[in-house]
Length: 374
Ligand SMILES: Cc1ncc(COP(=O)(O)O)c(C=O)c1O
Image (cartoon, rainbow, N blue to C red; front, side, top):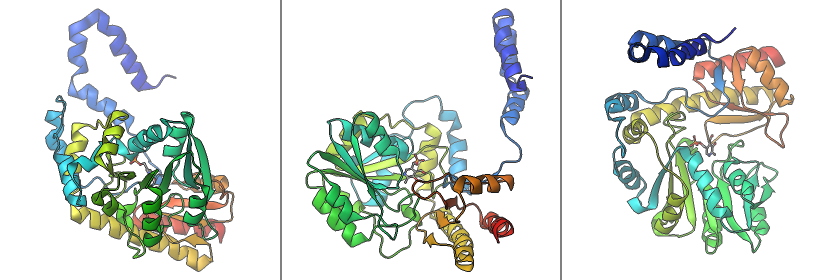
């Protein structure tokens, strides 16, 4: 049987040529449109612990900002430079150091294009978030994957040793994903200062807002200082709960920003611009998200301690621990209980990545885990 939404659409579009104006009038009727929207919404959503989203966002203030912006949706240009200016002020850099992207994913792709512009290689930790290197690989770059060390931390010495004369970019993810470890700040700064003399260093700080580890530091001060080969990526997808709104940003030397701007659209909707402008000033919501995330992590990592499961202490909004069970089997078992957890991450087929949902949902996860495996 055909999907009823499809049926109705076919009817509308099929009939439009016949009944023209009358049908168009009917299409814009609120009753029809709202019933179609209701049909899109799936009932009984599973609990999402699979994509490192924020279960609370976007904040109420961000939603109100979007509601206020609906009537401006017909205009190009959005809020002009105001978002860039705000982000520059927050980070202590110049507006020329900032670029906006459709999620940080767009910036990762653009940086991949930049790296692959000339033949050469990219050095990347392994495992890590693969969007940048995948984009560059398609365009002909060779990817040199450097395994994490025995503590599952990014191995800067090994990465340094892996750099070749043709290496155009080094990708770092701090905190990393799927392993939520950080790179110690002094070692990282030394590495970046040395390597960025003649190569691009891309630092993906998607989870930066969740870190309260004193050994961590953003490398933003190096951009503020004027280093010309460093790109830092941030995203509103995580602490601000904007994953579906697609707002990301890059910080770099103005010459590098100009190059990135040539290979990305940076075009985000007017709603997203208004929402981001408000969200980045909404400290209460960010503090709330951080606190709930910490509660969730304490529940899951507490279970790992109790059951003696190996885990990497999280600096992000997800946990990574060794279940000892094939991760696809584990995923399917959790799905049976209405929980979606992360996919398999090579080379850890018996580890699970579990994103933080609400603390009460994490308690349900722990209860389910114990019921199934203890
Ligand atoms: C490390 C890292 N970087 C970048 C992204 C891309 O996120 P977005 O495109 O939503 O900003 C993600 C998404 O999960 C991520 O984990």
